[in-house]
Image (cartoon, rainbow, N blue to C red; front, top):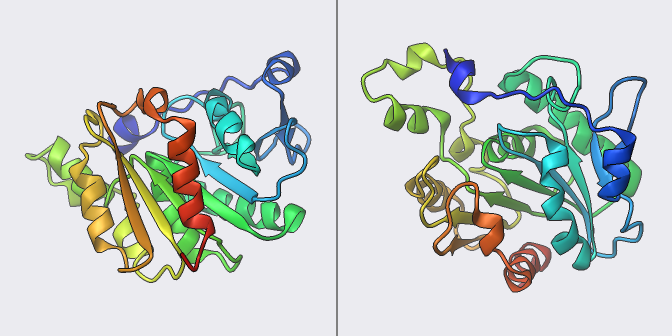
Length: 247
């Protein structure tokens, strides 16, 4: 039951022609598998590398809209792909996604060195938070877009009459996973988020360590249309915050 409302795997593997049209390439291909997609247009990345974990619908290929604004700010962006999404083998679930994410983040650091940042979107925020807690790789900073506090909190609000603790096998407890994170965390909520009401983002933000956090609310935006409301100046403000540790 949990998986039916939480995961929507899409096994459409992008073709070479699709990738070329969007100036992307498979990142870390291995036979029929790969770990994600990367822009072919920003080989030089003075600001560092961002490993991005997307939401539960669509695939990494559908997140090409991140490449231009972040590339223009000097970042190399790896659009991480989940097991069973985008034609990859594997299975869905927190254990599978986090294990895969840990390896993706380690390989990104191995390939490009520091600084390496985490960016999560929706479900990807839960993955990014769990990776942050478990990895031994230095994380320069975290950006969380339309996040939740805990999966149990979201499930309880959606299904108030169900015993959610008995239904859920995954936790995605971002409050606990980020409790001791030592670097900066940017939280970005959508004012009219109809999928993950913004109170979940606020509750996560309030739980984070003081002095290393900042929150933005994208006005008039919903869960899926917020990219249309995020301009270049907002991206610069967010990335400047996580980049400048002493600010």
